[in-house]
Amino acid sequence: MKRIVVSWAVLGAAALLVAFAPFNLQPVTSNVERIFRVEAGDFAYSPAVLHVNPGDNVTIKLVATDVVHGLYVDGYDLSVIAEPGQPAVLSFTADRPGTFRLRCSVTCGALHPFMTGKLKVGTNLLLWRGIGLALLAFLGILTLRSPGLPIVH
Ligand SMILES: [Cu+2]
Image 1 (cartoon, rainbow, N blue to C red):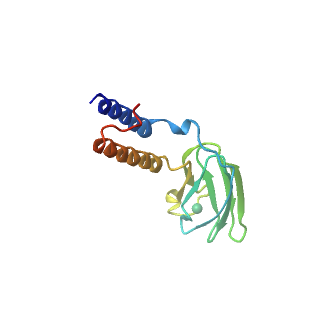
Image 2 (image 1 turned 120 degrees about the horizontal axis):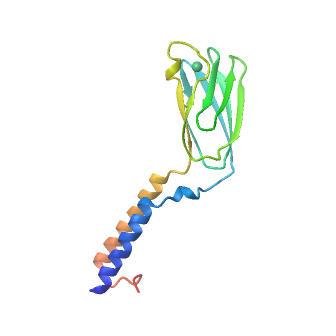
Image 3 (image 1 turned 180 degrees about the horizontal axis):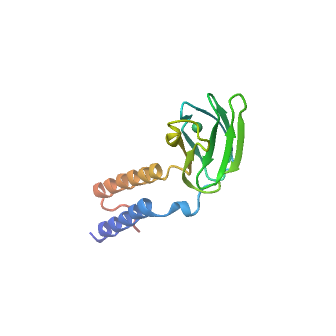
């Protein structure tokens, strides 16, 4: 009987750890070259969301398809401006995890303030936490079915 109580306490503690532990204190760095071709036109970026891992070397080739557009990366304080027919390149190391807004830095028309995108730097923590919790729930079911689960002692 005592064994079941202990194992549930262990599982509960593990669940809390998986759900709330600040894993991003030590982000997994990958140092991979990530090259994106981003088309800027019609008040939008395509693709609008860029995913990279912390530590990646990111190169964004900005291609303006109608008028002059810019791309400013919030948080990194970087920008680049591309004229039609003259792609511009922005390279940097994604050393700050988080989600950063991309904004057009050139007043390009009426919808210019809405010309935004996102740079997401980081592994998908929510996904991994979800997988971890699912595994723990599975372990919990095993514990229920066999009270003498050997992982306790
Ligand atoms: Cu623009």
